[in-house]
Length: 267
Image (cartoon, rainbow, N blue to C red):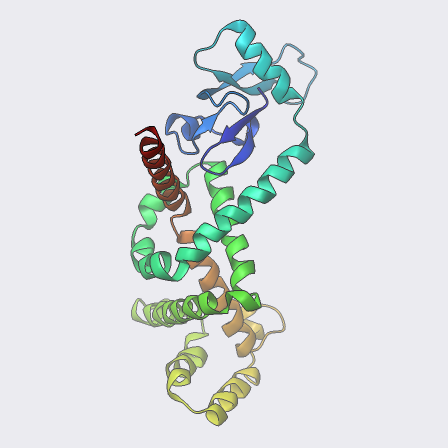
């Protein structure tokens, strides 16, 4: 089968996008899109040696009769990219609501520990699908928090990014790895939270007049640098959040609730 269904993401996943590690670790809960039976990935040599990629990637059932498996394969073969896109859009909207609902209550308070778990995070995101999924969810969240309706979440996210930027620049000085921007930005970062509106605007105006072209390598002022670094910190925080683990928790809870409801009805 060309596609498998990720129960975790609620999307159809192409076999070429999945690494063996994703399936072996059951990272995305991949099943047959038709019968929902467990599926595994197969890669075999193509008979036609004239094609550029000589490997064929596909999903197969673990246990199924030939007729049963063939029926699934025929139905999956009829799935178009348009069908796949439609399913993905609907699913991404649902997942985004999960993350938004817990962004400030659950995820952001753990951003510090997420940074400290960087080694384990690299291991978790060792596959292309894991990395691309993590980045895509982070970008979806970034679009939301920068919209008018996402302002409360953005305020919390901004505070975390601002604090981390200050810590990062102070660390550069402490470990003697200054880049040249620390002397211009750190005094301002330390003053801004405790100043009045008039002085606040003056501090930003002073940054605007400070040239960073030689440091950055293109026409740039210190205010541009401040904005660039702050956006980078926001994106780093969003990318570091444990989306897949959170999704697993949400779906496991939903499954338990459904079983509970089923038991009540049965009684």
